Amino acid sequence: MTLVRCTDVARTFGRGDQAVVAVHGCTCAVEPGARIAITGSSGSGKSTLLHLLAGLETPTDGTVERPELGARDIAVVFQGPSLLPALTVSENVSLAAVLTGTDEAEADRRATAAMATVGVAGLAGQLADTLSGGQAQRVAIARAIALRPRLVLADEPTGQLDADTGAHVLDVLLAAAVETGAALVVTTHDPVVAGRLDEQWQMNDGRLLVPATEGVR
Ligand code: ADP
Ligand code: MG
Image (cartoon, rainbow, N blue to C red; front, top):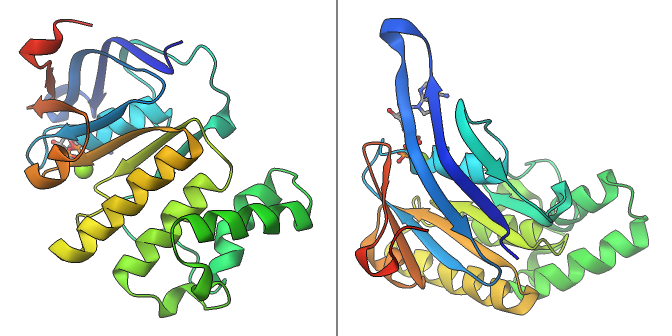
């Protein structure tokens, strides 16, 4: 069953003369097991569409439906630094489970498994603010998969990394999605990154250009 379905979704920021239509008339669906890249130049509406899929933004028009997803089934990897700098890596990864009522031993167990999946187990006791950009992004991925979500949404996860580090982080993200069975949606302006996902959704000036081969969903 479809994880997220957007029907004629629009998101406008501001009002009157200041209004910016970040996304217009977007109809799309994320199916279980999907590996989707949302591509497009800066300002084309990629992040806004990702946030709409996540439920972090509400549409100003149209509908976003997630028929079988609960709040804990969706995880987001944010674009910039997002770890809590004064906590250790393992505390960052287990925090969401602890905050949502999982007992600490079980939260630790899940964090350990997630850190192993993305290859950061050796950093578990390190403070987050001592990590390199690539390490921090892998920890953010571990945090995202620790709750075993059914959908992982990552906003330019390689955008601030050099090409080799970015490629490795993408490997980790793809492997984590395979291991946990989660669907994956990644925004990127990098065609090399986009080419590693199974589907490419191109945004242009707030509009989603559905690939001709896929037809209208
Ligand atoms: P991308 O991720 O492709 O760079 P965004 O979705 O961030 O694009 O932005 C699309 C458009 O919406 C841009 O013109 C941007 O300035 C505008 N925008 C995004 N978020 C906001 C916001 N919170 N307030 C006002 N304008 C915004
Ligand atoms: Mg963006």
